[in-house]
Amino acid sequence: MTDNAKAGSLNALQACRPEETRIFLLRHGEVEGHGEPRYNGQQDVALTPRGRGHYRQLVERLQPRPIQAVYSSDLVRCFEGAEMLAAAHGLVPVAMQELRELHAGEWEGRPWSELQAHYPTQWQARLDDIVHYRIPGGENLLDLRQRARSAVAEIIGRHRGQEVVVVAHGGINRILLLDALDAPLERILSLSQFYGCVNILDYGACGRVTVQLLNG
Image (cartoon, rainbow, N blue to C red; front, side, top):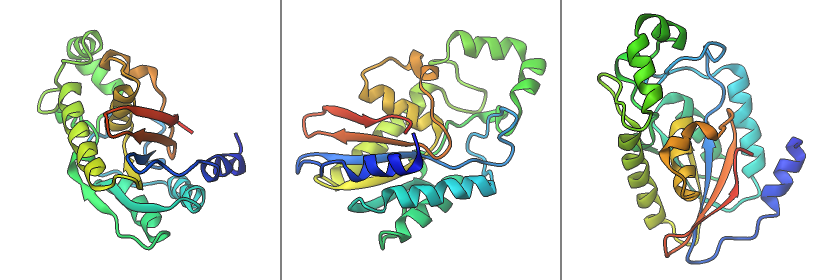
């Protein structure tokens, strides 16, 4: 899909209903070191020039929408873009620690190849039970889901009948999408979240969630 087509699809969306909250759930732009898989976790990692370009594209795509608020992980790879997106709508972004990526504990900042070589037993244990395995000093997916749900519930409660932007991370986004699709956490690796992607979720008053766009 071309950028113009993507922008058009957002522009063509009908306004959300008064009882709904529409969340434009974004993944941050490309980051330094992206060429080698690693657990960035809650470390601050700088955006690449291409990553800043992702945010400029997002500003353009979301420009037609009546955005009422912008929320973001407080990590720089999210918040830098949130400031750009908020400024385009005359807003100031709200930082939420609850929207941070999974805390990878002792594995933070370390390449997957290094972890596989030095901690093969622990690496396999996480693969065997990705939901419950807690990285030493970090979180598991149940911990991540609890704070992701808490953050979104707070945002929904503040913004009935409004459209808001949430800038977050691949892990957080996948958790919220699995919840919306009523899918188990074991399916977390089945969902792609590209750098700078857009997901659109409409949260109804009765707990119903409609996914309007996924990884767009």
